[in-house]
Structure formats: structure tokens, C-alpha cells
Image (cartoon, rainbow, N blue to C red):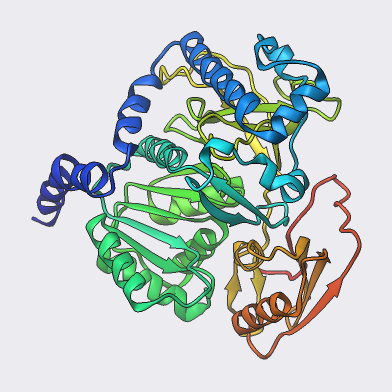
Length: 459
């Protein structure tokens, strides 16, 4: 009876409730884009590439005439947007870094979109806080892309979904909490805070899962893995979800197998970031991750500036095709990817794929009391701190944490107090936190940068 009620609600949600909410109440274009994406994924690759190039050309035209930063770049190269007729021409444009955005953000805003954008902060797996702007239209594209990617796992609109996720660190007003609770209830989404994931929290999480019985479970990779280990050792899941979706952190084979074994369902890896949301995702074939081609132009570029060949690693360089308010062109996200042979997909989808993403390793920080704090927490703390250029968190002992920061001229005591208060509240009084200001943060021996590093041996 419960599953029959779920099917009835799902149908009601898909046909009436969600269209009313998106189209009439919010006046958004998300459902229109989603319908387009459900069709375009089956296009022949040549048609997808043609569509992508047309969108890129329109974006470059817009940048040439409306974005001061990019007009200057075109002039420096002595070219016009009309001169970019091929990918080889596109390679002439400079790569954009996070530092470029921090220094030149105001000149990267489109003059004809002033007052029409939203702002947010990001920290990312590179530990470099940054503020960015985006348009409501580009947000609708991102949500539509994410819904399509989740649909490849078997997730349908209106299904019960459970998120093992980070919660806002700043106290929200009662009205905002009420609005969020109504939204989550209507959309059948339930969130569980993974920032304070100790033994009691895992017990509560399992109890919630067994009572709510969500069909889809989404979470940060490390907390999902920690929960799976807890269930296998001390608990019991009394139902079978349809799928588990791993996000925000790299999913290692041993983690995938453990989660799959405990939850008795398929496990799907995704790759995204705060700047663009979903970039790539697996389907049920688990043969690489499909790129969000209709929304993003993704390159894998080697250190010599040339595209990586199948089997080679390179820097992920991303162009957002629909954020006209603050165009991201050839933006180096800070992670690396493994290129793969673009053979026809078994599913029939024409989308390009990447084999794997490397460089998004975020260790869990463990307190003496057994609380496990995901690396995403520290990214959330730092991402709106304008005075921090880069940071890293290192744990060498259970009772000791080192926070290394590169500060700039915008850093002040207010930001420092907020950082210390938020981290101190999370780790508790038993852990000593040593804050160090440094001039540089070196890479690992393998050439990677890790935001959170734990040297604690855990079972």
C-alpha cells in the first residue's frame, strides 16, 4: 500500500505539483530545459558537437561586445570572436584561473546583465575561496542537468530522496527554516547533517533511513562510506533503496563495493562543483562519466597546453555556455581528469565521456570523541572569506589540528574570529587548533593539492 501511495504521489508531483511550482510559482525554465536534455542526450555525437559549438560561438559574440575583461583579451590577441572558427582557434584564448577571477571579477561581469545576476561563494577541492555571479537562466540549466544525471541512476521526480549532506553553518531565520521544510516536504527530500557524524549521529541516521525508507540516497562519499561501515558492524538496514549516489569527493573502488554491499543496490559516481553543479555522471553501464555537453564545454588539457589523448591525464578546463552574466571561459577548475576513447556508448547516448577525475581527495578529520568531520565542512567555512587566498587543514594527532592559510589585504579580525569560532565549535574543546599564516602551500609529491589531510590511522 505504501509503494502504491508513493506511485500516486509521484504521478501527482510530475504532472501537476512540480509544473505549478516551477512554471507558475517560480516562473523558471528548468522543466523546459530538462525536456530538451532528455531528448538531446540521444542525438548523434556530431549533432551534439554542432549544438555545443553554436552555443559557444554565441557566448563569445556576447563576451566580445559586453564583457570588458574578454574584450580586452580579444584585443590583446588581435582577434575578434569571428576569428574563432575551430577548436584550434579556441585554444588561443587564455586559461582563466581562480586568481584571475578574484583580481578582475568586476570587469568579468557583462554590462548588459548588471543587477540581473545572483552571487555565491565557492571553496572547492583546491582550497581557494572565490566569489562568483551567475544568471537565473544558467541556474535553471544546472538544475535540469543535475536532474537528468540523477535520472540515469533510476531517480525520478517525486521519489523519496535522502541527502547525507552539509548544512548551512550560519543560523537561519525561523521563516527561512519553515520555507525550506515546506519545500523539502513537497519535493520529498530529507537532509541529514554529516558535518557532525559521530557514533550517535550514525545511529540516528540509520534510524531515519529505516523509518523514512528513501528510494534514492545521495551523500558525500566519505560519510556514505562511514555509514556503510557502521551499518555492517553494528546496525541493520530494513529495506532496499533503488540507488546510492556519491558526490563531492572521489569514490574509490573499495568504498563503492562496501556501500553497494551494505545497501544492496547500485552505487553511482558523480562529479560536480559549486561553480557549475553537475559536470559529469555515470549511468548504469559504469563505463566512464558522461559530460554535461549541452551546458558545459569541457577540455582536458596537458601541461604543454595541448589536449590530452585517451589514457592521458590533464587539467579540467571548463566553459559555461549559458552564464551570460559572468561568463566563465576556459576556466581551470583545479582538478584533473583522465581522457578516454570516445567509442559509441552501449546506452546509445551521444554525450562525450571522461574516464575518471583525480585531485578531489578530501580526508575526514576525526576527533578524540569519535566524531568524523568531512573535508567539505572546511571548504564551507572558508568559501565566503574574501581575505583568504588558499588554505589547508592537516591532522597529525587526534587532539591536534593545523589550519594553514594564505591571507591577502582583505583579511581582518572579523573573518579570523568567524573561522576560529566555527571550526572550534565543530571540533570541540578537546582538540587544539593551531592557525598558521603561510606564504605558500606546496603540492604533494604526486603534484596534487589536498585541502584536508589526515594522518590518523583508522580502521
